[in-house]
Amino acid sequence: LVLWAGFDWIEESGAFLLHPVTPQATVDAVLVAHDVAERALMPGAIAVDSTDLRRLVTLRSAEIDLVRRLPGSSHEEIEAPTPAQALVFGAHRRRHPRWLDPERPAAHGTVPTVGPEGEAAIAGRRVFFAAALAELAEAARADFSALTGRDLAPLVRFGPDNARRVLVTHGPMTQTAAAVAEVLASKGESVAVIGIQWLQPFPRQALEQLLSGVDSICVLERVGQLATSVTGATDPPLL
Image 1 (spheres, rainbow, N blue to C red):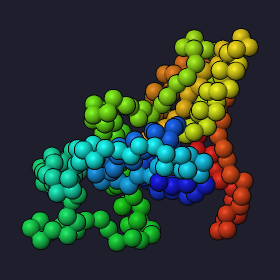
Image 2 (tube, helix red, strand yellow; image 1 turned 60 degrees about the vertical axis):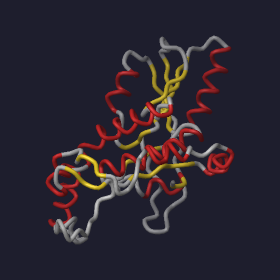
Image 3 (cartoon, rainbow, N blue to C red; image 1 turned 90 degrees about the vertical axis):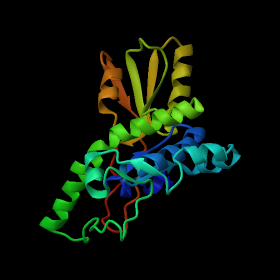
């Protein structure tokens, strides 16, 4: 979990990023993100607002049986989900791989560096690991939904299906935008709200489909204006 105030620092890290709409979705995202990280062998981060962080203590934590089943035991053997992982670990691997395994000696990763070597390492991570992230995340969501009946969808939508004006936002701001849309509906205005919960991998095709045929789109995003101590730049928008 990462407070939203520092989220922009990691948006370019290559990690998958979530900003759940509700406190319950944040609790669910912890289990789903854990499962995705173990499948993809990629780091992930979940953004929370400070106000929502206080609400989390009032929610019921995940049942222990659910934690055991999803993501599962660390020493459980699973099928390597991608060709790249099969090359590194073989057809099967531990859910938590042994990075230093005497029975299968291999050099995992590269020495952190700059220049062509570092650029090649980043390119390789994107091609061989990050490229499969969206598919593995969808599989983890499907397993979680089958066990709980809840879906941590990349996008959530509120309002009439035929609305020609749409507000697009992410995280808990979606709840505020939905409340505004309800007030506008009471005044005869037809406005829909789309909340983005998965920022990386970004659900581009799904968002384009929901916005098809819309007359006007308003993107609502909170952008910090405090200069950083390192560069003096302001926080860039995510959308």
